[in-house]
Image (cartoon, rainbow, N blue to C red):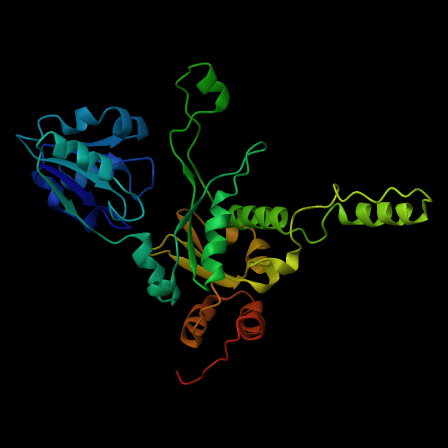
Length: 328
């Protein structure tokens, strides 16, 4: 049998069912635990084999080898079918008549409740990749806007890079891997603001040029009318669903561990915090939707930037329309 086992959010003690398996794999590219593979191996009394992306996607036959005759464990940080799906491996096992059992566990999606925001008020969950000098994808922002249009909160899972190759090494066929990288909320919020400004510029860059050209045309005695081809097609900032100084957000760090931390505030406030403020990985951020209940605002406000004088309370009242209820 193939056991697909969630390890939860913290350490090796979250699950002990792997001890009866002949081989134990740890999925090692979509998330991490706070313990090493060596510690896992020692705790379970089994050698834990790291399963990198190429192992799972290209060498799944090795994982499934003899699983029709003996038990094999495939370990996943968090819940195996929640934030990260491994349905393909289960389908492959099923096609080979290998029995499977999924053992669920806590995931970051369940830990979102620690923010005080109600889980049924969340919309689509998004993933934010690392931007590069030549690649700043914006498809995730479209999904964010869909959530915000109907007032829903949005959980954004931040990118991690484990066993990744540089473009040069990949092009040259060299199996040299970059050091692991884990996106910090500092980077995430700045990338969000970058895309926000690209979609809804504070001052459309062509607006001044258009005005000047229009003035020149009005003085021209020619009957040729001014062409609008230079008009910036992007809508102005006041049409944005996510203006930085009028949008609430929360940063979640190391959830499910003894050092977990939450910080709330406006998007602009959180973007101004230094990277060290959030600490080590893993991280998730939440963009708060307008369907905000007073109890949600009060609970998450316990960790807000600036305390009682912070933007959390001002924006919550003036923009989100939420009045504080001091009955708790």
